[in-house]
Image 1 (cartoon, rainbow, N blue to C red):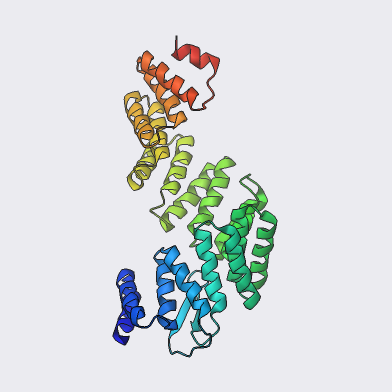
Image 2: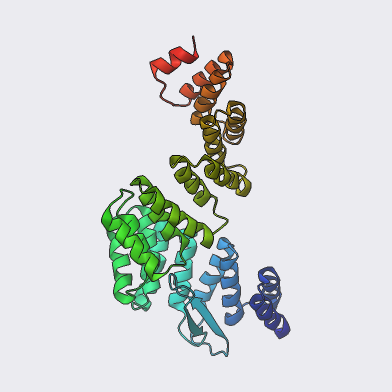
Length: 342
């Protein structure tokens, strides 16, 4: 049976996560309390996004005796350290790490109170590990407790002054208002780790709201280079180009949004909005119709389609859409209602 465990490790090293999980499962059927294999499977399940079963494995690990000697060395990437890893052997006390993983799982499951409890346990056992404070700060942030979140992120920076994720999240706690301090903090986060796309994206959004289109465009260009499959980045870059009157560029970005996520109604709406600006009303109607198909309660899409239909002379259809938009909560001015529903 040992061969299954060995092959699982090889498969994992080669990136075959599913094959590794299969071998870990086979090995653990005969050796259910093998700490090395159980920990390896727990981490694999976590990385594979199998939160519930990963949680079961980590909870079982907490019930097993500590201090089992082994030749196996595990690596845990420190969050926000751009690939820097710390090595652990199962002969070390790994219980703080188990609680850290459990906290991360509860974050994924949006159980923020339970996540905080797990990170509290990890911190009590290993108070010098900054990534535990980072996890707890994220739990507080998601739960809306900005005071405790800020305290934890500041603690991270005390232990690791260059931690880019802590700087990034402290900047987010300042809010979305375009302030010099928030931009400075995001710039520091980028300097600490220029490979984190979301710091560029957050600064780009801040600059967009401040009217700095050139700076915003540069930031989203960098974010897309780092994470080319993120459709939200293309949506926001398209908005920047649209506001800069680069309609060709905006259409290309909105088209990419639709390509990456065809059911994303905002991509269709945004594409349709540019079509209206180009006086291509028939195509705009098609885009708004697609948005409504994917989101039947999309009041803004009904409103915009009503405007496009009116420009095409389809008055009855335009009035019908306008009434539907109003039913869905869109505020319709008397002037618009009078014009479209004569």
